[in-house]
Image (cartoon, rainbow, N blue to C red; front, side, top):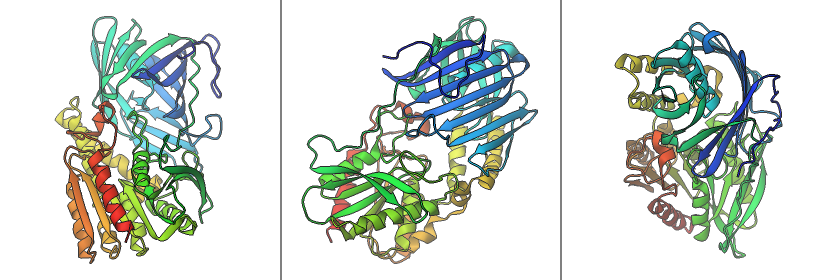
Amino acid sequence: MVALGIAALPGMALSQGAEEYAFVVRMGTDTFAVENVSRTPGRVEADLSGAMLGRLHLVLGLGARARVETLELTAWQPGTDPTGTPGQRFRLTLGGDSALGEFTVPAGMPPQRMATQRGAVPLVNPSFMLIEQIARRARALGGDSVAVPVLLVQGGATVPVHVRWRGADSVTLEIAGSVVEARTDAEGRLLAGAIQAQKLAFERVAGHVRPPAAAPPDYAAPPGAPYTAEDVRIGTPAGHVLAGTLTRPGGGDRVPAVVLVTGSGSQDRDEAIPMVRGYRPFREIADTLSRRGVAVLRLDDRGFGASTGDAASATSADFADDVRAAMAWLRAREDIDPARVGIVGHSEGGLIAPMVAAADPALAGIVLIAGPARTGREIIAYQQRQAVEANASLTPAGRDSALAAAREQLVEGAERQPWLRFFLEHDPLPVARQVKATPVLILQGATDRQVTADQAAELAAALREGGNPDVTVRVFPDVNHLMLRDADGSPAGYATLEDTAVVRALLGTLADWLVARLER
């Protein structure tokens, strides 16, 4: 139960005479997030908090007819102190057909100029204050059906959001393929509603709501497990510390071990995704392997969760160095057999594992789950096409414009983001050809729309061309990029999946293959 009432939040000023309210967002019966809002005619301040989201502090500067002139955003990642130093802070100034983003955290980031449309409303997912601002802007423009240009801050593209009023008390907003259905009042205030595609329901309440305290993540071994779970800290040559969990089977003998490597974006050691309820794939993999006699080390990514370091300046090559530090730490332990150590990488982790193996022929085996075989430029171009083609609200001309804008933003993003610049140009196939002595298992979902299934065969061919004699490929029908049962595979549907447990056949194949290779 969420306790209601006025709750002054760190960094949020309660303005004199302001309208104070909150959006309580639920996923099923659980409170997913709370967004407290303080609104005056020229300014809106919101504080969005959720255990799986971290914290976002947003301030809008408003002009006439509900036009947004500035957006100030401060963000704290999940698992970090929401009153401490933020991971990101920037100010977005909108004017005419462009927007200028200026960063103060992290330091040294160059200004970012984005093409947009006059009167565009910025949107940061999942802020319902900003969704409400789109509705208010539509109400100010007039008419029962209005297309409001919206700047998607996370991606940089500007898309039309179709706002349709159904009488005086109901509105529908079509946002990048998702539909928000809401009850409203005459001024466009959102009172309650849902985003069915994300299984989110929201309700507006008067005053401010204190967000529920986030329970600390549980990385302990399940009751009765035949293994232990040890919290660990690993120093790196770069000077930061990686925090993680080592699950180790019982017994006094030296055991084999693997390091799990996460996909792109900052991830915790379980590789959890906030919008996919109950999804903790690395916990499942660790449990499966440790029950089969294999120790498993899973880590919070650099600069995320309990790990320190700067993720903003890091590339996949830097993350490969973090994996090497983890490997060295494992091999130095007296309870781990240094000759029987491997890597399991998912998505970007499937790109990183061959980078490590190419220079470390002593590895006993690597597993690539949904690992890419093409450059990031090719992969992102495919994903952009998929997203635009799935957006029924776009006309053919609108699709062309959206793709052109996305390509432009990609170029601009690469100029300021080291990770993206590296990813766009990195070709995994030449690296795969250098992995000559390490056995490789490639696991792939047939319905994966992020890294397509045909890339599994391309990776295998490159490995064999390089002379690797031990390459195994398994493609699983009706399995998506997240290793979940999914006949469609579109990322837009991830939040609606009922079954968020990794497919058992995939886990079994992974365990059988690894145990056989690590026993050699």
